[in-house]
Length: 458
Image (cartoon, rainbow, N blue to C red; front, side):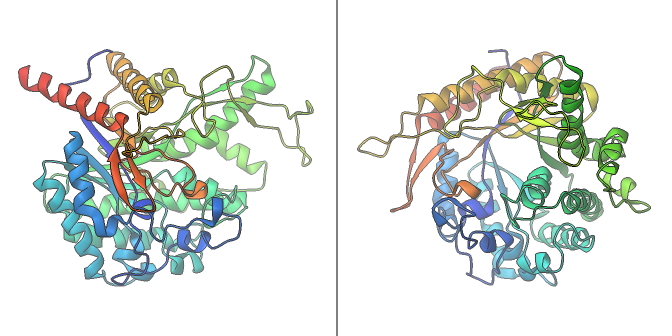
């Protein structure tokens, strides 16, 4: 494997709703995911995040596990309805106290905190007022960001505004498979713009309030998207998919505007991005780091299964296809580390000057614990090894990539999959809440230790 830079960071990631539990303790109110979990059929087996990994009560144990593995960084998210119940008004001191203790626990064990402000748990009251399709939510988010910073800004350097706006907007408002379960392209487009606006407003607030140098970031779910063939219909479909799934998210933040071809694609559907005067300047407020979440890539076809190139409304077909012939994870996702290299090189080429961190990468497999709860997950270990090698190749090719966070530290509530899918470096027995590091976690920690040893020796 090519060498990673001496100061490269190795960590693991989680999110509040997926691990914390304690949904009604110490003043926390409901989020859209608490509500969505109660919709019949929305989540596998009717699972909820009510207990999850009980991290709210077991946080010191989990931080000790992370540090014991040898990882030097921890990416976690703050629960908006825990910190600011209802999404408006003053902070909830008890909610902030939890994250205050978490940050202190991390620092005491030599682990750098990487804080994400929003990982999909919008307060239900804000959803009732319109949610992300409503412009006001962007301003409520900036208020919330400032409340968190007032308490933690003296000790936390790394701040990420949003995790995967694509999932919040498209999976949540267009495809209906994530909270709040909407199915409207127009609402999804409005949600994307207001997520971007909330990001820009928050970056400005945090920068103005900073008491120390801050590393401000946003994290996007990205992948490559090639045409299925050289046929013009497939090439056009890949271009549309790239506009909607890639450049829609990076261009406004890093180039100061939405792609012209995307605007044309949306106009053909009678949809307009609700940009107001000053929005694009706010959204393009400079950031310090771009977070890249990568799991897989797709090919795109411009014909449907019957060979038609237009849908019932006369609009062009854009159909995602697997590549085929590749190994699969437990979710049936193709394992494509070579595309992670290509992705990082593309971002470096098309959006130069912004350092990157791989803020999520991992795989679900059908773990089989032994009698002691240990999982010899050679498949996940191989996955992580191949993707770290892909990051190293990208770095050798000129991509300024500075860290890698495995998803996830713990087996947890995996959104619509409930508890059926396990991504963790650490196994969680949900019946007893017992934690047991897996082979993959031990391997990643040892890799991090070797990297630090080279840094010290060099």
